[in-house]
Structures are given as C-alpha cells and as structure tokens.
Amino acid sequence: MAVIDGWRVKLFCQAIGEDDPVYRDPNAARAAGHPACPVPPTFLKAVEGDHFSSAQLMSLLRVPLRGVLHAEQSFDHLAPVYVGDQIEVSRKVADIFDKKNGAFTFIVVDTHYFRAGQAVANSRQTILVRNALEGT
Image (cartoon, rainbow, N blue to C red; front, top):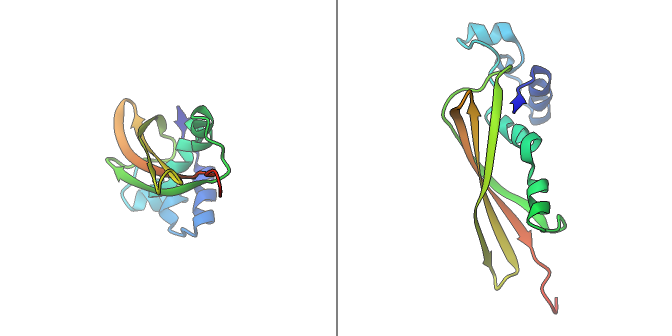
C-alpha cells in the first residue's frame, strides 16, 4: 500500500516540467473541481516502483540489469488518483518472448492500481533485455 504524498507529486512535476498548479496547489485543484490535487498520469510509475520495482522483478527473474531497457509503458486510467489516496499495486508478468534469434528478450508486465479495492488504473510495461550471445 502506498500513500500518495503531495511533496513527492510536486517533485515529480518539477522533474517532468509539469507546471499546472492543479497538481501542487490544493486551492487550484479545488477551483478546477477536484477534491484534492490529482496526480499526473505517469506518476503511477513512481508508485509502482515503491511497491515492486522493475529492478526487483528482474532480480526475481534472474535477469542481469546490464542490458535492460524500459522499452515502453502505457496507462489506462479508470478514475482520478489524488494526493492522500492509498493505492495498492498488483503486478504480474504477462508474457516473455525472444526476437532476433535470442538477441533480445521482451518481458511484458501488467500492473493494476487499486484504491479501496476499486481499480483506478492499469498499465502495461515492456522491458527489453539485450542478451549477450555467444560469438559476439
């Protein structure tokens, strides 16, 4: 369980160059019709990392971090997430497949985000592993 911290959302916004006050000023958020400051759409990646990071997942799968790239990630937002919300994260490996005769392994991870047992978002991340092949 992760509690969405306003200070962390503010730092995240600074890091990505998001300057909309609705994400950091409770008064601006209320004026825009929100009960609290919402989080930017990709902030859930930071919450995911707190719960069970991709690095932890790679360790569990015995994949060395050397050669690992975050290839892509998409989000499906089902409900707004706000500062102060308690978010539960569930992750699972959905698929693992090779390409280029084993030179690349792709690991697809599905993540589900819940607030009070209700789904608020889903994401699908693709991790690329560049494999060292014999003779190269």
